[in-house]
Image (cartoon, rainbow, N blue to C red; front, side):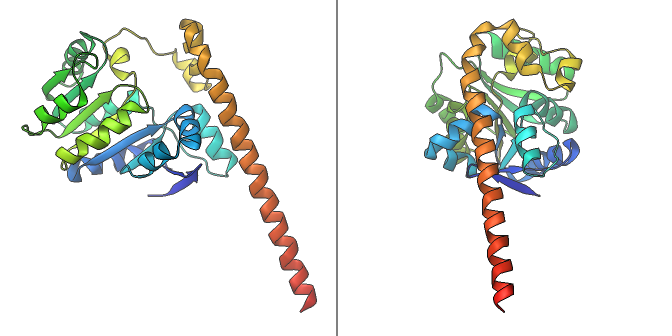
Length: 253
């Protein structure tokens, strides 16, 4: 698996099929997955504990146009695989999984269960809890007594990644993934952007137009873009300096 480090976090590279393959492999061994977007990486840049938490996860898959552009500026062309797609791809790719759902508002996880079973009837959803009335400790206590292959945690970042790490301690053979607002999308409460918007990398703008409160995230995204550019300029400067020093040493020889 090829990776590239951004702000101390190593992100997986590859085609959608390769990224999905890496995730499917963890179903056999257990582990944790983070679908890393620009906002998460900017948060990790200034919160070293979260950076270490992400780096300690089994797999970090790039999610979103901002990540694709950042990796492209480093000379790496890679696909991204949004969590909202990854979760469903795992279910339809591997039948008869025993799945737990944790997160969302009251009623959302239950309706998500129904939506998943309509898409993947062979999936065995053995546990469903919302993210408002049950604590992570209660979830860990319950799941420790059960046989579970896959756990979807939809609590928003960075909380969901911290909960995933805790659950991994009591479920060493399960795959645990933080999927943000995927339950809201899967149950139909939050529609995704039209395909054309997604293809043009404008899904973030479509979401802001539909939910104006999301505009509060713009400063974070702009800060991420600025620091990616700054990091690129610093790396280019270092390369130029090293090249000049090498040429100078060669001339002296």
